[in-house]
Picture: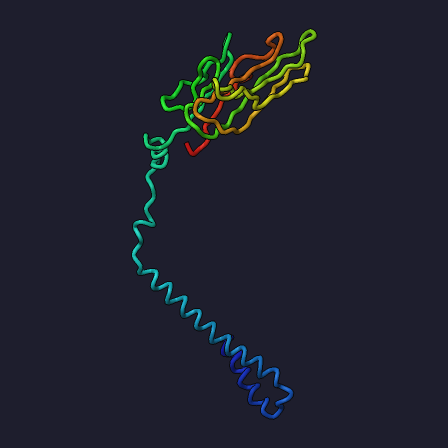
Length: 215
């Protein structure tokens, strides 16, 4: 009804504007734009109604509406075909480093002779945590050093990372880095402390490595 009223006003004004052309020229233009806008609005509303009616009769796509059963994604990850990451974590025993987890059959990281040996080429992420106790006496600086061991008759031993602890009170040293390793390489970690003044236990002192994808 409002649109019909506007249309009537426009028609009436056009009839009067024949006598006052110059005065009502702007009103003619405005009425023309309003007429075009009304036509466009009717066309749009008609199109929307037709599209909505058509979609209501379309059959649902079975493929698009299928949802995976619960746990199917996890089952794929845990399947024997899915690659499993190689990792190792070591804690300090009474005399040497010990494997903190059961070794996996396909792991590319193996503990041997107090060093971690690499059996598969790739990129590895290495992390270290050592907690030193309160310094006693005139002990020299305490430090943690990560080495890439040399291969006999091929390469020399190389220092990858080192952290020096200058504190007197108890404190923790952290190190981490990513490195590319070849098959046959090995890693070792040395804690330099005159009185072995660091805390044992996995929550205090440990180090390990992960093989990064692709495996």
